[in-house]
Structures are given as structure tokens and as C-alpha cells.
Length: 137
Image (cartoon, rainbow, N blue to C red; front, side, top):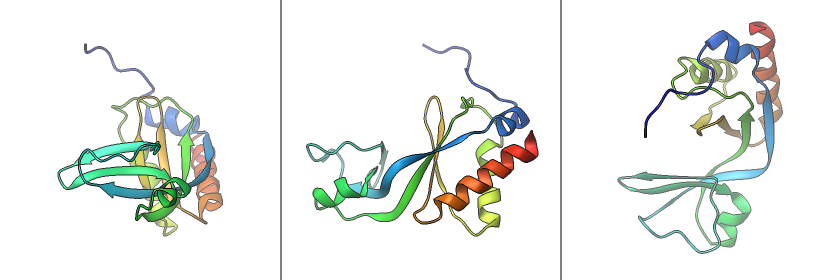
């Protein structure tokens, strides 16, 4: 069933009301062959690609299951209900982080956008996000 999109679409309103929340734990990216999710593993995200299934899970969980992983990172949830059709929201944030030499892996859920930033740079990322909101406000 389709329907009208929910969430904010106005870029300036999104940026001005942007509030970011640092989520506990260190996350990592894992890839597994199709259909082999180990029992007891509860990934934050799973995405099927032709080459395998990408999982974002806690580093501790990946290690407990003997999985090889990459990109230890911290998860920042953007506490604004952005529309899935919002134009330029993540681009603006990614551009600002890039300006500070920081890569980001954004994931959009139904209700929120989530940023996975390099571990050890989460405080800097939070400061940059606060500055973006301040400048838009």
C-alpha cells in the first residue's frame, strides 16, 4: 500500500531542527554469503547485495561470532523525522564532514537517518552537526 510520504522535506527546516544522538557501542561492517546469518547475531542493519549480505553490527558481536569486519565506527542518530524524499539533507551533512576530512556511511531508516563515522572522531562529528544546526537556525 502506497501513500503520502511522511516526514519533513524542507532542507532548512531539517537542518535547523537537527539534533544528533551518539549511540552506545562500536559498530563494524561485515559481509556474509547469502542466507547465512549466524544465530544470536542481531545486526543494526542488513543489506543484500549481489556479492553477499552486508551487516552493520556491534564489533563485540562480530568478534564473538568469529566474523571478519571493517571500519570500526560510531553510530549517530539524527533525531529529526526526515522524509525519505528530502533533497540534499545527507549531502549537506556529508559535505561538511568531508570538509573536515571525515568520511561517513549514512543509513536511512523509515523514521531517521543514521551516520556511521570513524571511531575516535565521534565528538568532532557531533560538534560539526551542532554547528550545521546553529547556522541553519
